[in-house]
Image 1: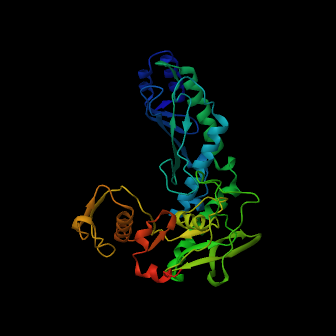
Image 2: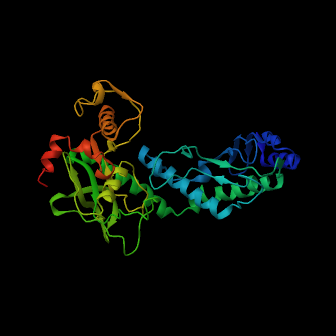
Image 3: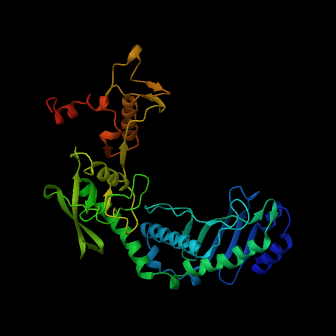
Length: 383
């Protein structure tokens, strides 16, 4: 296997040549601490960045085995490590090198949700980070010395700072993993409790804006408080500080199976609560404010989608009379209306096994909702 000395020799040799010479870097390079895999190199500085992998042996990473002792904890520690790598990249890397994407180093960090991603793999013998790197070039000319700084200096520093247990905030890492496991423990209890969702007291549901998923903080942010009639207690495996008190039993809103209406005036948070419940099918990072908003992962948000494609849907249970005598038992269209699209979405959700349907009047077809007998009973014509 080639070494980092060989990598440096190659970079010196191709410095100043055409960007196609970067293909000479494809392969494996062994350093004293890790192995660098260069799997794909870009064709020019404006193309999709090159693909690299960094594999660190467990003897160096030293991640405690209990942090990946089951599937939930493994996903959580992988997500946490991706976020630490993302932070290290921004602290260490110099972005401006050449043209286009030159100088870029990135990893798919995702958003506020904790998900299994391809960017990190944790196993007993090793951990591996998968990143993109914009190999530097000016026009069609390789900037070999700058590529050497990225691959032989910045990447090792990122590894030392974010893929070694001794360099990490160990308390934060454990709290991250335990928080995710708490959320999944709550999800696992919902069926037995007859619930479709749980919203912990003290949750911060409001976001910075409609275009941001970050939590709103300050005087305009109000912690969630459940109504007495629907307040439940749910045990969790790891201690959590709820509203200033350390506890292993969370209190909050338990939304029962059946029909639940969220009502109130404008700008009172109905859609904010529903969006939090909608996103509760995924675990969230600590500090998001919605980390203890937990929903059955079979819940589906239903909305009207004017113009969508519908193929061979039997929606006669909802709609029977359409213009020109169209058959609603085998309905197809390339340009669905609001009501037909919402009917189709409900049927598709049921077909894939949805156990809860979430509807917001703001994104629903009014003429579809008023057709329903149960809805007519809930909202009487006189009201």
